[in-house]
Length: 152
Image (tube, helix red, strand yellow):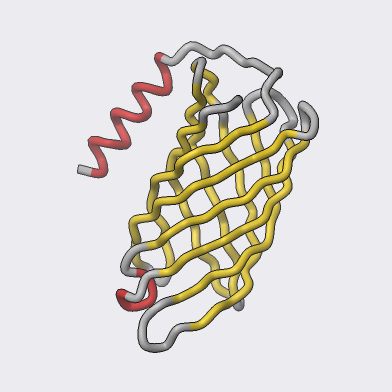
């Protein structure tokens, strides 16, 4: 099922028109993907927001929920990021956040995030294949997915 979804998304991305509009400043979005950590894959969904302060810079917030993470307890991630846009399609991010883990052994940890996305502009929305690399206590987790963004 996941393989078919990936193939469909790749095909869709090749046929989208590439239309960029630089008049927007607010970029809210919905993220869906998977997180690889501890040699396992976990479903991940989230919300994100970026405010573009210029054509090449932005600041943003992200919230992600990782189901069944940490032995089924799940995890909530909150991150603050700064973004650099070297062109109208590439988005590079650097941030810091907090991971909150539920369950019997609830705890909170600070993590650092590196991210990259490629923005396909298809008015009135954008589709952004995204990769986030989170560094937490010497361990690395990687979230890969697609963000659906509606700029205004």
